[in-house]
Amino acid sequence: MDKQNQQEAPNSLPAHWADETAERILREKGEKDHYTCASGITPSGTVHIGNFREIISVDLVVRALRDLGKKARFIYSWDDYDVFRKVPKNMPKQEELKAYLRFPITMVPDPWDRDESYARHHEVDVETVLPLVGIHPEYLYQARQYRASAYAGGIRKALEHRELLKNILDKYRDEDHKIQGEWWPVSVFCDNCNRDDTDIDGWDGEWLIGYHCNSCGHREKTDIRGARGIKLGWRVDWPMRWEYEQVDFEPAGKDHHSQGGSFDTARHVCKDVYGWDAPVSFRYDFIGIKGSVGKISSSSGVVIDLKDLLKVYTPETVRYLFAGTRPNTEFTISFDLDVIKIYEDYDKTERIAWKAEAAKDEETYQKERRIYELSQTGVSPEGKTLMPELMPLQVPFRHLCNLIQIADGDIGKAVEGIRRTREGLAEAQLAPLRARAICAKYWVEECAPEEFRFRLRPEGKDPAPGLNPAEIAAVRELRDRVIARIEAYPDDKACAEAVYETAGRAGLEPKALFRASYQALIGKDQGPRLASFLRSVNKERLLGILAGY
Image (cartoon, rainbow, N blue to C red; front, side):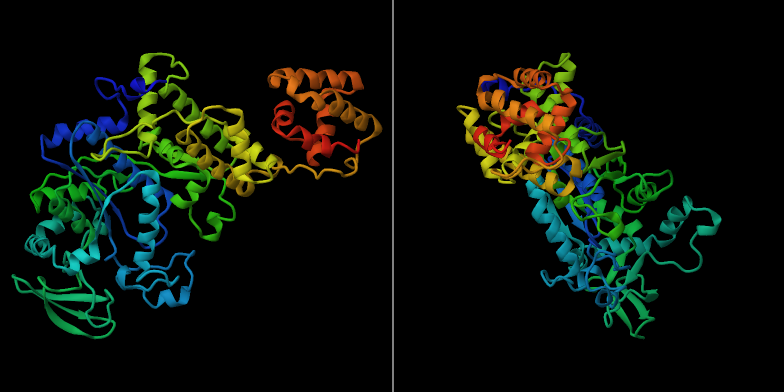
């Protein structure tokens, strides 16, 4: 595809769900200088791949807005002033961490001794990996915001509307779960022991809040405008920040978006207390995991995060998994043999996007091209989506896994072997191939089922044990009549026909010859498609392995 065609774009964006959401934002929020899109999470443990679904959903909508020529701000809030309620199973130093229960997360020490706090450790893990998939939010740290009294006005407004807030929160609750007795929309971390085991004693109607701590007995009156420990409850905090940051869009999980759930409550609080219309939103569904990444498994208490996903999938393929699936659709991320199919699907979308494969109609072309565009990590200085300079070299994932195993796990050797067979390849085409090869090596060594793995037998060894004389003779026939002249076969089909002819001459069923060949070459009863396999291995190496037959 030439560069001119590569740069062409449709007159209007196709109906991708991110584009539909962007248009809805413009329709409901009207014309603005910029639009604020938000996401966030409490860094109470590993930020797993389910949490990532919200992050990338916002990123895709932000890209859609920018592709329409709009300025869009992507803010990501670290709710690191939330309470440390429990110690996740996969954390080290369990007993040490338990001593900090009920502290703000930002005051819990890092059990790995890498960062200044437990919260910051998890924040850094995410902030360092998101750029790899082309996501660059503006980070907001809520502990910093609260301690700087940025929300003093919002806190006072909540106190002034305490009864209204209580009624809003009770609106969707049954009688057994309505707020009983005196209730306050704020909580306080004790200034003496740092825990939130406190009760509010009163508010002076202005800026002073009195509280006492049930853990250490500390008692004081503190000024909202300078207090370090006062925080809104999250059902009030969330809508307060919508107004403070002027948020236009924020999705939420299906638990929050259930009827009468936290999003419905926040919508009312935002409008009735803070005078701001709630952001445009949609519900995103859960993600399942099939297979595992190496030794990681849910049973051990270890969750799958974006770093784990990037061990098996290239950044573009990771984005494709989410760009190609509507947010309200539950889907499974695979680490088993389905990985091969996912790469095949991505490759087909890539071919259609570059018009290397014809789409069945124009609508399909526009849909697949848009999914492909949003799957790319590159963006312009204005944040608009960029296509690659050239169509990447496609090597099917299954075949690449075989080539890496043939090269005894040497990625450089495998990629160089591919490069020698393709003239005129640019570095821009080879770089994605290397990235895919790294994923293929990891997958085949750590995730693939045992029957998919193989290793070529050493050269100069005796024939494989267990082969009968007829099978040994057939392998010898394969060596002398097919492998010795392997370069004469222009493609896998011609080579496969020669293999079948060899089986006939040796008086064996083709299946028996295949088994004998695999035993001779890799010590297994099964392996990659034989013709393609023979054409992929260096001829001299094959002849050396079979020299003793």
